[in-house]
Image 1 (tube, rainbow, N blue to C red):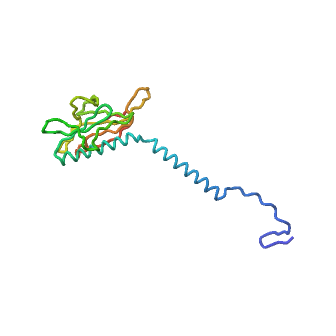
Image 2: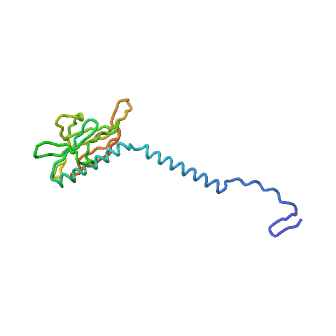
Length: 198
């Protein structure tokens, strides 16, 4: 038997090596890609399930219309208003020559709107709840006023989708609440949790 500087050396064939277990680089990359795809799927599904698109769209539409009307009231030196009825809303302009509110009909942004199925509105003016009238009321007048001076009357407009509470009774779901911002006479929107009050 011959020896080498590092130890013993023999002319017999080496003993078979124990098989090395582990993952190849390709296998690890495949697993990382699968985890990434699953994570993206979960994030996308949670972002679409977590929100109410109809509620968000209607909130954005009301904010855009009221901001536009607020600006037009000061630019045109004219009073405007928003009438909330059971199932929708519409916009009016004060006509001083005939001394009455007239429905705004010549502006597509301010056309009468019907709420999507399942959404509801609740209105509080000057601290008092308002029973919403039917759509086709006689001599309709707005409850929310946007004065030419830039001021707004005190109000809270709740836009929500009712849900069934723990007791089985219907209650307000998560809501968006519109109210005058006291600092700059603009309309502010606040999101509130289900069943919350202000």
